[in-house]
Structure formats: C-alpha cells, structure tokens
Image 1 (tube, rainbow over the protein chains, first blue to last red):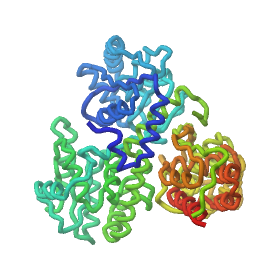
Image 2 (image 1 turned 90 degrees about the vertical axis):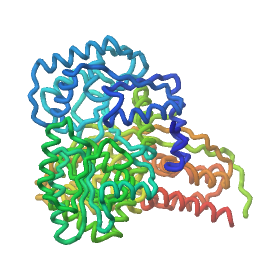
Image 3 (image 1 turned 120 degrees about the vertical axis):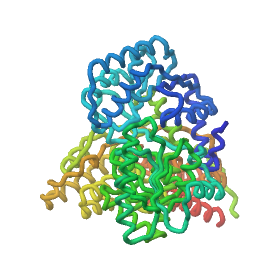
Image 4 (image 1 turned 135 degrees about the vertical axis):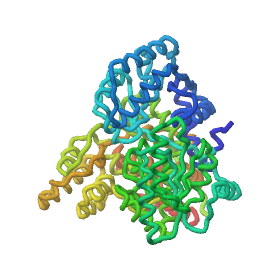
Length: 403
Length: 223
C-alpha cells in the first residue's frame, strides 16, 4: 500500500507537512465520496488512489458507490454525451428511469457523514437526503456547451448543493451556489506514470515491432472521433513530407463500442498500410502506455473536445514535448511556447510537430518546463490538498481564512 | 562567523494555501475586460496578477499577469499586452491601486486604438474571472535567530515564501514583507531588513527568490 510519505522524494517534505497541517484541521469531520463505479474510468481511478492517502493522513473519509440497472446506465451514458454537446434524443422515459433508480439509491445509501461529496450526474439526486450536513457536487465532464434539457434537469438538483466543482473555468455556469475550480491529477507512483527501466520500454517496443531508428510521434487515446485520430494521421503525412518519422496511435480496445470500431476502420483506411504508422489496440495495460509515452519523441493530443486531457498531463510529466489542441482543460496544462505547443487545426499541428522534431533543444526545454508545471500543479498531492481546502471552505466563507 | 543575535520575538513561518473560486464572469472584448476589472472583487485582481508566480515558478523570471497574457494571446494586441506585463506591481501597495492602474492602461489604449474594441476572442478563449480564497496556517517552524531562520528558509514550501513576501505586503496591506519586518523589529538589523526590502520579488521565480534571500542573509552571517 502506497503511503503519503512515499511522495516526499517527488514533491518535497514540506509539501507533505502542509498536507498534515490541513488534515489536522479536518479532525472530527467525516466525508463520504459517492460515485457510480468502483473500477474503470477516471473518477474511480482517482478515488481508489486518493482515499487510502487521505486515510493515511488520518482524515475520516469513506467511499460508496450507487447501484443501477442496465437501463439506468444507458440513460446516464446518453446524459453524458448530451452534456458534452453531442446530439442525443432524450425523452421523458429517460428521466423516469433515472429517477426510479435514484429513488432506490436514496433509500439504500447512507449519507450521514458531515460532508457528502457526489461525483458526476449519476448519483446527483441523492441531494434530496440533505439534512444539516454539507454537500458538494463534482462535475468531471465538459459542460461548456451542454444539452439544454439535461442541464435544466440536473440544475434542479445542483442548486440544492452547497458547492460545485469544475475542472476548467470554461465549464462554469451562472449558478447561485459557490463554484470552485479543481483540476484533476495524475499519480506519479502509478503504473501509468512511474519511472520505468529501459529494458521494460525496449520489451514493449519489441512486442509491437517498433524500432527507434526514426523519431516517434504518438497519440494515446481511444478510437473516438472526438480524439481526431484521422486528423493526427493527416498531420503526420504533412510532417512526413519533410522529416522521416513514424506515428503510433494507441488506444483501448473497441469491442463493445460500435462507433469505436467504425472509427478504427476509418483510421486504418487513412493509414493505407503505411509501415511507419503503428495502430495499436491496447488492452488496459498501464505499463505499456507508460513505455510508449516514454519511447516517443513528441506526444500529440489533437482532440476536438476534451474534459481535462490527462493523457497530456501524463506526457508532460514524462518531460515529453507535446502538441495539443486548444480545447477543454488542455490550455490549463500547456502555455503555448512555454510548456508545449497548442494548435487549432491539422495544419497547425503539423507545423508544431515539424518545429519540435527539427529543434530538439527547444523541444527538450518545453518538455522540462512541462514536467515542472505538472509537478507544481497536477499531481495527486495537489489534488488532495485542494480537496481538503474545499472541505474547509464549507465551514469558512471569508476570502482569507486564518487558522 | 558572527554569532547570531537572539530575537526579542521568535518568527513563526506560515503557509498560505489557496483554493480557486470561479465567478462565472467572462470577457471576450477589451471593453468587457476593462469594465469587469473595475467591478470584480479584489481577490480576483489579486488572483490574476499573482497566479503566474505560483503556477509557473520555473518559466521566466518576469512572469506576466493573466491580463497581459490574454490580451496578447487571445486578442493579438501585443502592444497593450506589453504595457500590462510591464506594470510595476511592487509599486502598488494595495489591490485597489493596482486595479486602477490596470483598468486605466486598458482604457487609455482603447482611446487611441478604437478598432481594438471590435476584436473578439475565439469561442472558448474568453477571459474567465477567477478569485483566490486563501487559507493561512501556522507551520511548526519557529525560529529565534538568523541562523535558524536561514536553515528553515531552505526547507519551507514556496507557498510559505510566497505568503511572507507577496501576500503579506499587498493583499494584507502590511506595507513591507514579513522577513524584513521581523529582522528589523526583533533583531534590530535595519541594514539587512532594507537589503531584503530592496529586492523586487516580481522579477524572480519563487525558487530564485528563496535563493536570493538566503544568499543575502548568509552573507550577513559571514561578516
């Protein structure tokens, strides 16, 4: 089990001391996280790592998961897509299914802690159990352009919470409750981000027949139109006219996602058997993702929409130069020309890639800046600190709080 | 090496941690930016003129403020961006006066560049007004002389350095930084206090600022 002190070599002792100071201020306050799944997905991943660390800091924290039938999760998937701005047909029956499942959870889930911390829309209706305790709703998704009907439905619940948390300023909405900005984070000690021995990296490259004889451009993402893998190939083909390089497109398997399979076919067609384009269908294997990122010369993330873009965080933490779209939470991580290059188009991505491949010293500097930016702002220790501050903010309304 | 004088009152190191609060206010033109700058809470102005110091400690020794960055990057108004970036924050002893200077700089520019008011930022690249909520906590570090002081200075967080140098001076309107204040009043070393006061902290990264303060004190200790 990883302990909070294991992070001292990465962030320094004084940062951990600050966490201990904050934890002391939370003595006597119990907190419960509630989300919709205990495994799979970014929320479960962060809670599974953060909860033991908070306990190690002696914070009285719990984690519970709601239940729902298949129809419920189909509806919440539709809500999720609609909130991301995708056209979805939402009917009254969908809201009814949502409420029917929510009622069961309201009856079953204990929300008697001092603070209840609800993640994402699935458990949002639990707010009807609010007594004199404090409730926070954490919105992990991009709601910069949400489906009006779904947002209106959720809004009736949201306004009953004490505070809401978004991942980027662009997601904030005019609301009568306090809104806080807390970015997600990565865990530098997880399999996806920890240091790897060169032999491990080499073994992964051998497994996928990738050699290091030419620079590697990589995008790690599931095969989804919003990640624009076809656009990445177009940018690579532009770069290829001038620089001999190779491209890795690596993402999760798409067996149960019909649209994913279709996108994968489009990607393969676009790649046209180019031996320097490696399309890798990776099963959930964090070490392999880590190795591919570390072996890359440049990482690209040409998303059309993005929540926060943790693949960018992961790449920057590995001190890689990154070219990424100016969408969602990405500009928060990359300040153009300081810690990476931002783009708005295929042509822009291609130009930035050429710059980085032709100027390795510049690329190195951006990567180093990126790593320090992540160290200061987007590691799990900062995330833990922000959550503890958020808990304290529920009891202290002033702008400057003295202890 | 000179023997360290014991202080009349010990120095307690504090740490300053902040939570970022969203206001829901956004600007997409210079006119909107100026008008909102005049209305938003002081903690917003503070956030946008000091955030860079904490979030980008490694980038440049002269961190721009958010207004300068946005005007340059989102509106391509480089000349105004330069004017805003070069506002000498150290000269302003209150958020109020800093706010006035920023708003006046934008208004004056608009007066001479009418066409600039017609520029809109791209969708999604608007300026979002954010404010900082500060939590001040005493650390366990308590020191009685300069030697102990410099030893602790080497290990406290940058948040602590930040609090004692920036936040104490401007947001809490204490006039001078906490280090100079303690060295002068409790140790009676006016020369050293003045040497620290003369540093322009806005032209250092926080880590370099820590090193500069340590260097000045160690030099004093070795005299």
